[in-house]
Image 1: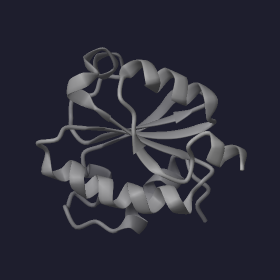
Image 2: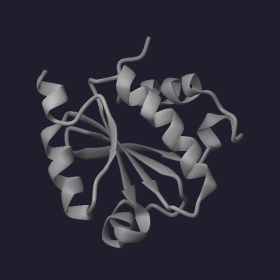
Image 3: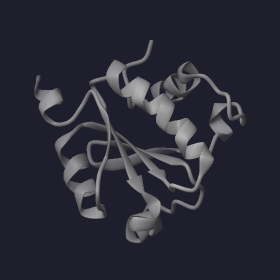
Length: 126
């Protein structure tokens, strides 16, 4: 219940960089998708993340428009879109950059992404 009250269990967009800091402060595990509207691969990532958000309520799943968050993108050194920032205890621990770790293909499975997030210990995966 506590997780759900903090926005876990759903994949949602946050409006600004400021919201990012607030969101990561209040949850132990956060996956944040830095996306761009014009990037087709971001829609593919969205599809998988919405499935995983419902399945892994121990982790908060967010998305943030990279074009509206230049400061954060620079600070986190985000150059490739889509990039997932994996944040644990308020610190960015790992990144999933593009689809390289996911088989380098547009038709990777949700399980592949789930496995990769499990490797980073950002979700409970067995």
